[in-house]
Length: 170
Image 1 (cartoon, one colour):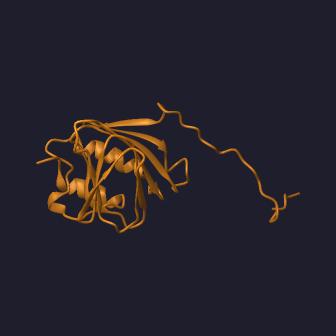
Image 2 (spheres, rainbow, N blue to C red):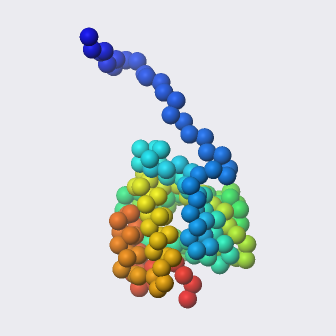
């Protein structure tokens, strides 16, 4: 005997994840720290939430855009500089910056204090692979621009200026 699917009853499940303050897979990209809080695997590729510690004078990303995902920045501590197209904004703790797809954006810390922020990607597009690829690429000396661009493009990131895309201050 087979069980008939009900079209009228909800099936409740407990698939919740509670990630505590110091939990999550952590990557150290040079001096930038990224902790995976909600991953693509956990959310069926619908949502990615990552905690970023951006040390003084560090660049998170130069001007780029996404075709298939939106990105939201939530500043928890410090002062984050967010570039959107040709304008720059200073985001203080509590600020939220929603960056829809096809919007050129970049972010950096221009201060002498660490910035702590939460990045949200929707959908997540397996963003953890991007961060792990960044870890590999940015730890090579010299950084290979072709490899960096290939990684960017694979994970729905497109630099506005490929001659100035590596996140280092010159």
